[in-house]
Amino acid sequence: MDIIKLSAIEIAEKIKLGDITAVAAAKAYIAQIKKVEKTVNAYLYFNEEEVLQCAKQIQQTIDTLKKEGKQLPLLAGVPIAIKDNICTRGTKTTCASKILENFIPPYDATVVKQIKENLLVPLGKLNMDEFAMGSSTEHSAFKKTKNPWNIDYVPGGSSGGSAASVAASLAPISLGSDTGGSIRQPAAFCGVTGFKPTYGRVSRYGLVAFASSLDQIGPLSKDAESCAALLDTISCADNHDSTSLQGGYITTHDTINNFKKPTIAILKEYMGEGISDDMKEAVKDAVKQFEKMGCEVIHVSMPSLAYALPAYYILSSAEASSNLSRFDGIRYGYRTQNADNLEDLYTKTRSEGFGDEVKKRIMLGTYALRSGYYDEYYTKAMKTRSLVKNGFDDIFKKADMILSPTTPSAAFKFGEKADAISMYKADICTVSVNIAGLPAVSFPGGFNDDRLPLGLQLIGPNDSDYMLLSTVHAFQQKTDYHKQTPGSIS
Amino acid sequence: MSVTKDDVKQIAELSKLYFNDNELESMRKDMDALVAFADTLSSLDTKHLEPLSHVQKSENVFDEDIEGEKHDLQELLGNAPESVNNCFVVPKVVE
Image (tube, each protein chain N blue to C red):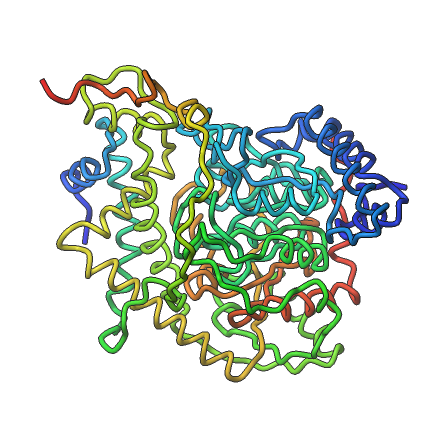
């Protein structure tokens, strides 16, 4: 049996049945990491001994639970890789930044606690754009992660390592974070399924903050069913995060087969200028498939979407400039070696520690927040946020969910989007979701002529997470895009 | 509104960042493009809209007043660039 060809949920089933052990699963991924990681560069931290030791301990717990006749957690024994902006006690968490190069968190993020309590086996930490700012993972201070479908292309970002690791079978499932599309866009580029939960469903405690009102942790895996299992594993009310929902939402794994033939809306604005022809074709093919499955498809327009992208960049940069003010070289992180006084220490530490893209966002955020300009930019962007949210509310009166491309086109080549604005436009279909706090999923919907994956997105109203995942699950029962894998990588 | 070198210098000071002359000009160009992009919002009529800072309804969550988890002091100080006697060391502030 080739374990790395199985989905995360299939691995969990086999471990439950005793067909394989958590140790065997870990060993299979370790072997694949040894084989192709040098080409893909998905991991920032991987320690074989630690993984094996953890897998052995977890298998013992699984054996004990089985003997006692107790139920195993959904993903017991399954290996998982974690984006490097999620704190792991005792293991470096760098955010792919020089300023946190040697940072060892003294605590686990709530999601890490959840995956440990639910007996998953952490494989390591994954590469990303520095502080999750970027759409290609080219902004990592440490390495360039390659797209497993074609190593001349970027894996997307900022959760590039999270998507590439799943696509190259370097992990069956991973955790990413999504502030403006950072789970969905790389999932689309790498041909995997990535889910951004309703804001507040997953605790942000221990996620290094980029833009707190937009950030949300979520799962990436080969299929929707595995994503649902991980989402249920990590969803919880958390006293450490004042924005975490206090429950009341519907679980997604036990409802995965409840496909209810939803009414699906196609947004005119996400099918127009700037969207590649092959992407439009993929949407049209999916429409045909959904109609065959009994869904009604309607066509709608939301003119305010044109303003979502500039509003997003103002809001996210403003929040980032505030959040990143904590990096001052005093209590943790990098400190400059040649400061004359305290002020000098702050400035030199930050100038030497942050990369160019992070500095750009801090500068833009400070520009928007400074006295005299606050109303013109920040307040204006917050009002635009209301407009975008109202626009979505209106559409969800007529339809259960929205279908769109996840990205304007398939993955681009390294260095292709050199100027900031053209890179930012790669996020045009995803940022509106974060502004409105909605759940959304990216799933494989075809390939272009160069055999690069094309990702499609379903967006739903708040707390429709279960509906989105069951709809993608039904789609994945009828299609095999999600089962295709890149050719051999070596 | 176009961004000048003086704007960049002022914002860099507020952001506690330093740019040399070459970096300053490159940052000015980038910011000029970004601000022009942000300015596309100015044509939008938002008079009737309330600013939305956060998508969630704020609800008070009450908690028992009991001691929470503690962090290990040495683990915390282990990340400090410099520490002495369980204190963070900073450059001299008062002459």
